[in-house]
Amino acid sequence: MQDLRTIILAAGKGTRMKSSIPKVLHEVCGKPIIQYVLDIVKSIGSLKTYVVLGHKSSLVKKYLPQDKIVIEQKQLLGTADAVKCAANYFRTYSGNVLVLCGDTPLLNKNVIRSILRKHKRSKAICTFLTAIVHDPQGYGRIIREDAQKVVAIREDKDAVGFERDIAEINVGVYCFKSKELFKTIKEVHPNKKKKEYYLTDIIELFFSKGYKIETVETEDSVEGLGVNSREHLALAENIIRHKILKKIMSQGVTVIDPHTTYIDSNVKIGKDTTIRPFTYIEKNVRIGERCIIGPFARIRLDTRIGNNVDIGNFTEISRSKMGSNCFMKHFSYLGDSLVGSHVNIGAGMVTANFDGKQKHTSRIADYAFIGSNSTLISPVKIGKKAVVGAGSVVTGGKIVPDGRVVMGVPAKIVAKKEEK
Ligand code: UD1
Ligand code: CA
Image (cartoon, rainbow, N blue to C red; front, side):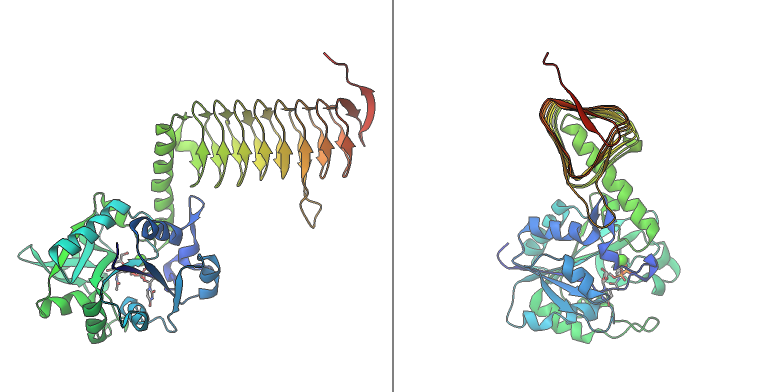
């Protein structure tokens, strides 16, 4: 959209999280909450994105992509104050401004697009997102005149009598005409109880000026969830997890038990792979086609697995690459390793990849056979078609040549492997 800029409000303390890290950096399915909001903004074609930071801003700043413009809110005086902090950047701008909260990971891009469309079509001064929820506690309630025109948003702490029962709530996504927003926001007074400047009070001011206000309702009320507490965090995790699983299944992957399968965001799994119960797959993992993963497997971040691979119970693979047609069926740990194809990793093999100071990489070439209960003290190289005997300890720095057999503690070359 040519005339659209975005402000993301993310300066708040997140007091209810009771955390030492900023709320928006808490992860949901391996991805920080604010990244969900940034992804939405990216998908709608906003020209510039301003992120208002305050509490522990340097931590969030470090995380944000370079192209985002960071605005510091020096004192956390509320959401209206946060928007006001951006005013200088908007002095000569007369397009539309989308204002989002950094704590809403479940937003749907289609609903944001429909806000923008309605805002343009209706020529409203403000179009904002509402949701009908079972439990409106904690949210701003939408006050309508004769159940139609929006008159105001009443914050939870100020809602009295019938207002408390209003199920239509403010999600915290607004599209404003920039000029009117920055003019009227100066008129917002601090809230009497909390002494904060509420962005939501601008709605009543717009109404009193006779400005047009429009709303769009979410397709699914859960999209409006703002993460304010650990309980909300778990709820968001649960919802996004099931969305991820649904998508993966729609791409031809069998998930035997979605209730005990945990797959982070940004995981790709090939067709006809089966994920057995109690499996955890972390972010940025790629798994090929026709694999069997689990039960009780943990595939950790940045791992790559080829096709036709069988990863069985009580196994962990971390930051490793494994080619196709490999087996690692029981009780093994593979960390920071590069494994070729047709490799068999016996029960109980462990890569000792951390020397107490740093991690080291091991390589296991094609057709190697790693015996049960063996330890590879990284860095080691196991050659093509080489065999590591059961119970061996291959000490750090060792290179096992192609086709050779090593055995013992420490492992020594014992014979040439017979060609079959
Ligand atoms: C806010 C809305 C409420 C809405 C709810 C939806 C206000 C006053 N209330 O309430 O109507 O139903 O979101 O989730 O806006 N922030 C700043 N600076 C501040 C204060 C907050 O940047 O000084 C940021 C926070 O980091 C957060 C967002 O604004 O991302 C919303 O603040 P939060 O405290 O979570 O507001 P809610 O009480 O949830
Ligand atoms: Ca919130």
